[in-house]
Image (cartoon, rainbow, N blue to C red; front, top):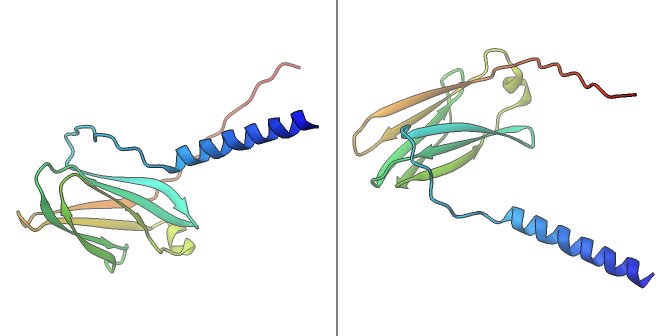
Length: 137
């Protein structure tokens, strides 16, 4: 009985350590890329899409970030200041709009120092993947 309790405590300690290590943010140098701006789809949280914007600029600058829906309406905007910026956006988009065949988002990033705007269109792409599993009987 005592051995079972000790084993359970060790497993609980190991799992809590694993979860704590997974919850901490690692600090590392960003890899050098040729692309000054990157937008990635990270997945969904509470059925809302999450995107990550990475601005790989070496000099500090102020950026105006605007996200527009497929109708051209602004759904989010903010100003960012600094160098090598990374930001995650969870957008409040309905499930109907997200599953629509003409769904799209536009990210507009404007450098206030150079007054240049780069636009990125995000649209949904569906794929059908069929896998087979073979097992010996």
